[in-house]
Length: 84
Image (tube, rainbow, N blue to C red; front, side, top):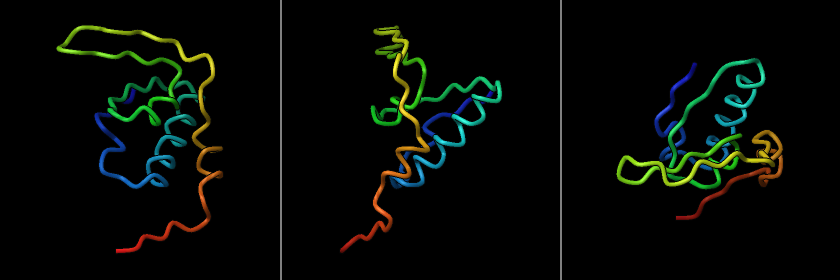
C-alpha cells in the first residue's frame, strides 16, 4: 500500500501527470494507492474519489471512466515554456 499526501502539490502539470502515470502503473501491478489531493484534474486519474469536509465523508464516488495519466501526459504540448 502506498499512502501519498499531496504527492503532486506545488508541481507543474507535466511532473504531476508523470507521477500519476507511475501511480496508475503500480496500481495495475496490484498495489493499493491512497492519495490526498485538492486538485480535481488529479483526482480524475483515480478509480474512486472520497470527498471529506470537516472530517466527514461528503461523497464516495466510483469513477467509471478513469482518465489515463499516460495519455494525458502525451496530450500535453511538447514544450512547456513560461514567460516572466
